[in-house]
Image (cartoon, rainbow, N blue to C red; front, side, top):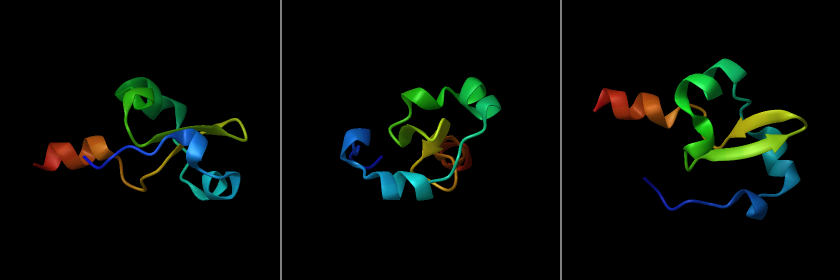
Length: 60
């Protein structure tokens, strides 16, 4: 995995463009522990990746 970027270092403009994570996925995969989880913005959980990192690991 790449080096983690802390959520506090990401600007609001960038956070608003990041993909929203459905609540079902967060509960199923535990996204809050993932290094790509960006936190919530406008009351919606966000991720830094378009495709889930868990899916990438399954393909290996």
